[in-house]
Image 1 (cartoon, rainbow, N blue to C red):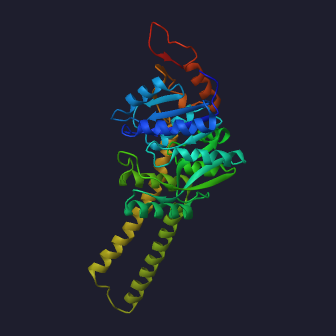
Image 2 (image 1 turned 45 degrees about the vertical axis):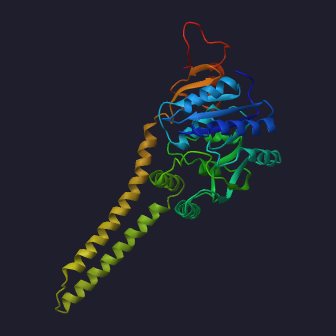
Image 3 (image 1 turned 180 degrees about the vertical axis):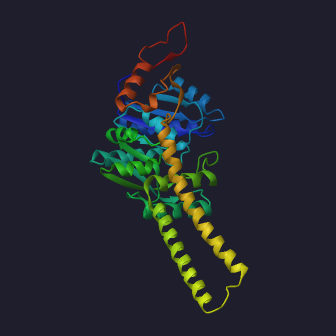
Length: 352
C-alpha cells in the first residue's frame, strides 16, 4: 500500500447506483483541491441490492485513490460509516453521505477552519431542500428533544457530515458501542468543535434510505445512548401513580365510613386501565435499556467485511478487524495490499 494519505473521505453507500459516479467525481475534485493526490476515497457498500458494488469496482479500476469496502450484509448507516472510518488512514477524515445532499465542495471551507485549530468541523443545516413537511417537522422535534434529554451537548440540526482529526477518529473507533450514534459520540469526545452553517441540497438521485420505521429506531438509539432521563420519567410516573392510588384508597375508605358504597364499573375499569398503561410504559422503557445491555454483552463484531478493493486487487480482512485497535487496523490494511500483484495461484489474499 502507498504512504498514508493526508485526507480520507468516507462515504457509506446503500443502493446509490444512480448518483455514485457523480459523487465520486465531485468528491475527488474537492479532495484534489485541498490535498493534491494525497487522499483516499473510501466507499462502503452496505449490502446494496442494486449495481452499487459493480460501479465501485469500475471506478476503482480508474482511480488509484479509491478503496472499496463491501460488507457481508446490510448493517445500517451508522455501522457502515464505522467500517469506513476503520479503513481510513488519513490525518484528516471527512465523513459524508453519497447522496450529494451534503456538498463535497464544503471541504474547501472546512479545511481552513481545521488548520486554525479545530478538532472537528461539522456541517450545521440552515435549510433542507427537497424534504417533506413531515420530515422537517419530525427532524426539528427530534433534535430539540435530544438536546433537552442528552447528557452531553449535541448540536441541533446536524448530521454525520463532518471533518475530523485522526486522533478524534481513533478515539471514536475505540468506543465499543454496537448501537452507535456517531454525531453524539463525537460530541462526547469533546475538543474544539466548530460549526459550518450550510443549506442542505436535495438528493441528486434515488430515494431516501430512512423511512419512518428507521427514523424511529434511530431516535431511540440516540436517546438511550446519551440519556437516562426516560428511566427517571418512568420512576416519576410510578411515584405519581402510587400517589393517585393512595388518594383513591383514602377516598374509598372515607366513603365507606360514611356508609356510602362506591358505584361505577366504568370508573373502576378506567382507573385500572390507566395504571396498567403506565406500568407497561415503564416496563417498555426499562426494556429498551436492558435490550441494549444484552446486545453489548454479546460482544459480536460491530461489522463484517466481505472484501476490500483497490484497483483490480481484492483482499479479505480478519473477522476480528472491527475489534482491533486503531494501530492494528492500519497494519492489517497495509498488509492487505503489501504486494503489487496478487499471487498467481489465487486471486484473493487473506489477512488474519
